[in-house]
Amino acid sequence: MSDPYVILGVAPDADDTAIQAAYLAAVKACPPERDARRFEAVRRAYEAIRTRRDRLAFELFDTTPPTPMEILDRAASLKASERPDFSLFAALLQGER
Image 1 (cartoon, rainbow, N blue to C red):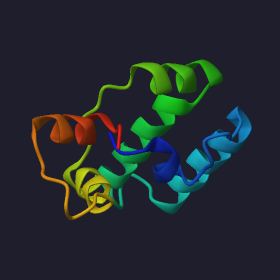
Image 2 (cartoon, helix red, strand yellow):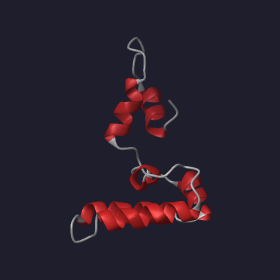
Image 3 (cartoon, rainbow, N blue to C red):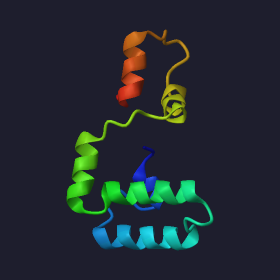
Image 4 (cartoon, rainbow, N blue to C red):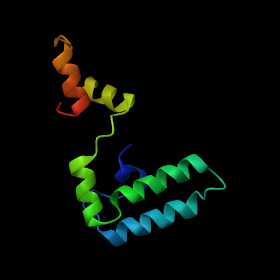
């Protein structure tokens, strides 16, 4: 899953009411009849972080693999002189770099 905070347009330290308001605004702006894929992404994002407990579980246990774009963004920050190897690739996938 992509970052639910980005999808809903809220800060990572937002409270329950701010997240719910962002969710309702996103649903109103893009109802399922207009764009079902966008609506489904918004719904999944809201379900992942709707309560404090859900946000903690998301931060601790989310094992969704990064998207190719996220990996490329992480790789762009590497020095050109670094020789890629398996450990570097594993670190990129785990978000350690």
